[in-house]
Structure formats: structure tokens, C-alpha cells
Amino acid sequence: MRTVALATVDRGVVHGLEGLARAGRVRVRRRRRGDLTWWLCTGDQERLCRQVAEAVVESVLVDWERAQVVRAVGGVPGQLGRDGAQAVAATALARLSGEESTGALRWRRQAARRLEELLEQEGTVVLEGFLTFRLRDYRRELEILVDRLADDLLLEREHREFVALLRRFLRERQSSPELHLVAEGEGRFRLVDRDGRRLDGLPDGHREQEDVLIAALLSLAPRLLVVHGRERRRPGGFKTLREIFEDRVSECPGCELCRSEETGRAEP
Image 1 (cartoon, one colour):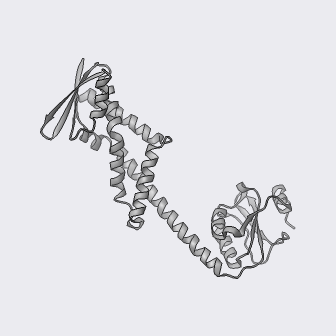
Image 2 (cartoon, rainbow, N blue to C red; image 1 turned 45 degrees about the vertical axis):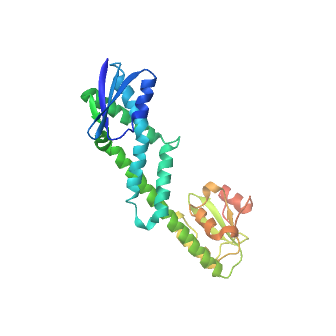
Image 3 (cartoon, rainbow, N blue to C red; image 1 turned 90 degrees about the horizontal axis):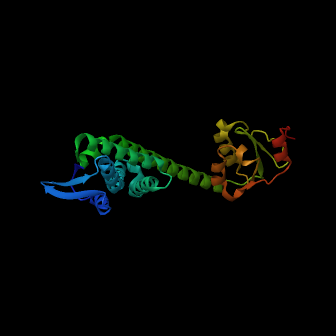
């Protein structure tokens, strides 16, 4: 038999250790000394440290992750506002608790291994010191996650404001006849009239010119924009076009323009 000791400033780990005790796998005694509560765990010498480490990590790490996320959110850009900061925190915590969160699961396993090794080496561990110093790399990873989510939220907000501005501009323009956008694949596109004829002064080219395409369409303000070609061939900016033009955008189910695009024949 072997005894190891774990010290905490609160009763946070008692639930996990009590579970071990109820299962008869480990004997747990509690002692109060000054500001610390000591948990004296006695059990099988070969498995004791692993059992204690796994039980402790399972009990405390979720709350520790939440505390680190809340702390990191305090440093996000002020322009997010209170609601934005809360949204970032909620998204980060949802990702950590989601079934697909292999990163959080990996870190919890790693934390258990680190605590097990420390118990094996020292026999006595102050939990708060372990979390502060032995999980610094995990804390940094959580900070990076929060920063990335904050950046994503800011970009999304800026995108919504940009789209709203262009919608207002579009509503103020006098509508022109319908135009057709032919997606040719690999980011290439061309603008034609309803008969497939290229119109003078309209851009065609590659994905690098999509901002030019959007500017031209806003200037012309077609009452209907018909998109030809399979979805996988459309310019990356097609999603933005649909957001701006809304019900003015129509997707062609298949016509001569679509077939010529597929076979690579020249347009009329």
C-alpha cells in the first residue's frame, strides 16, 4: 500500500476522490492545515497515483478551463462590447465541451499524466500550483482560442456592416436589365447578357478580380442576376453576391450557357 497527499485551497476535488473511496479503490482522509485542505489517499501502490490523478483532473479541469476562458475574454478587443465578449466565451466553452473537442480531451489526458508523474515523484502536490505552473501551455492554447474567436466575431460583424451598406447603395440605384454570371471554374468568370453576348466594359477574369465584379454589378444594379455553372465552379465571392443582391439572384438549373461552360466551348 502507498499514501500520497494532495493539497487544495477549497473542496473542489473531493467529489472525484470520494468516488474512488466509495468504489473501495482508495482510502481518503481529509485534514485541514492552515489555508490548505490535505487529501491523504492510500491505495494500491502500482495504481494509486494514476487513479488519484484521473479522479482529480475529471473533478477540477472543466471548472479550471472555464476560469481560464473567462480570464482570457477580459483581454479581447473592447470594440466587441459586453455582448460580443459573452458570445466569445460561450462559443469557446461550447467547443471545449463538444463531443468533437478532441483538443480538450487530449489536454485532459495529458494533465492527468502530468499529475500522475508528479505524484509518483513527489508524493505531495499542491493542486493550485500544479494548475498554475504545469498547465501553462494549455492556458496559452485557451488564450489563442479566445483570440481567434474574437477576431472571427469582429470580421463577421464588419462583413455584416459591409453587406448592409452595399444593400442600401443597391436600393438607391435604378435597376438595369438582367445580367448573367457564367462561372467557368478555377475562379474564372464572365458577365454576359441574356443571349450570352459579352457586354462592353464589363469585367471578366479570375478570383483576384472579384472585388471588381462586385463593384461592376453594384454600378449596373441588375434587376436579376442569373448565375450559371455548377456550385463548385463559382467564384468564392458568390456568397457575398447572394447576401448583397438577395432575391435578385437566381441560379440557373441548366441551359446552353451552362453546357458550353461544362464542355469548354466558346461563348456565342
